[in-house]
Image (cartoon, rainbow, N blue to C red):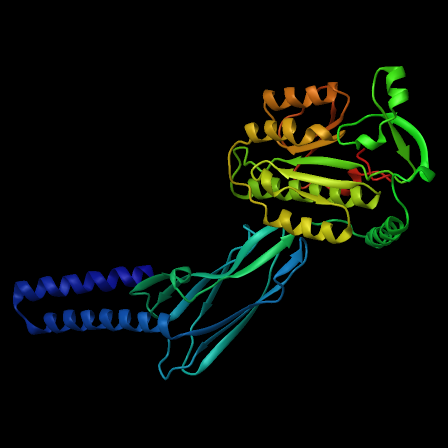
Length: 390
């Protein structure tokens, strides 16, 4: 079509020049016919854009990574005139999928499309038609429109949850029910359930302190009960870009979400609480103790954005302010700088269980526990039968 378009406009210019040079009417008539054809084609293309009707529906607004929801498009011409040829680009969740629809609607006709969407990465996406290219049958005039600039047009939102092996989700629900029943009949600090003593930890109630034993040993001891307060695993999620962009950033973000979700699930499954803090949004931290809170956390992970280049100062602040009361600290990141490594080593030397989870990036050799994960690796095998990290 490009060759036809070039020849057509060359012929118009040639007829105009010959008309001016020779004065013959035939050249002017051919030139004016060409101008009329171009104007008519532009008018029909504009008419096509504002006249075609569409219905755009997404089978699921929320699903899990790996599923294949369906986007339904119903495009119709409800006028007495045929519409120009249209090429419609559709934005989908997978950046490697290029979806372009071509159609030419005759009067009072329509076409339906059912697009099965691939979901390789978790996150929040806008799905639907975006750019439209309209051509006449010979390709003489091409008009391009972006439907997102129309005030009435709204793309469909799709929330893709990180994938987690939920084969033991019933055990979580049973544990929640058991814990709720026990808490209504038993008091954690009831002397009847006193079993042992342990060293004082920040956050312990002053009522638990064993003053006599503490004076003898010159350090604080507290009472340990059969129904202790739930241990909490504190995790920092680094949602910086680390210089990544495009599909590389999508892979990194997806692996971070999947590891955090699996960690949360296994922590709850084995009777502990999971508390998370986000480097970019520390005020949006969340604590998960039950199956219902896990599902909420998984949705929050899907909405989590990875946009800022560096989060060093925020991570250091979280370690010094929020993580100080916890003995189990995990940080999920990619390329921690020396300042973050130094702060983590200080936490490790203070007697805490510190785990550094590296998603891609360079290896780290140090004394603290380190887990190296490549983007796209299977996450479930990293957790042993006791819900811990291997």
